[in-house]
Length: 53
Figure 1 (cartoon, rainbow, N blue to C red):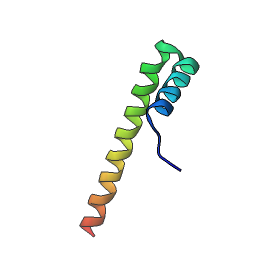
Figure 2 (cartoon, rainbow, N blue to C red):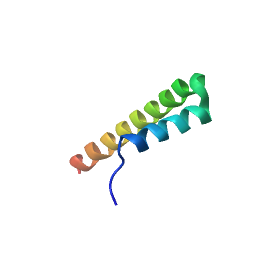
Figure 3 (cartoon, helix red, strand yellow):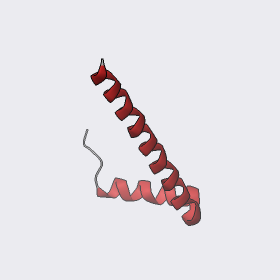
Figure 4 (tube, one colour):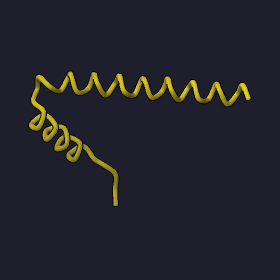
């Protein structure tokens, strides 16, 4: 069992574009980016709380 190669990634990207369309994709990626940023901020606060104890 190998990892994902170039043909598989291209296929996945094409399917995502077909499902969400070109106009919705930037909104979707922006929301995903904000979610990851919030997650990392919350994770950072938890680590700083552990250091205080």
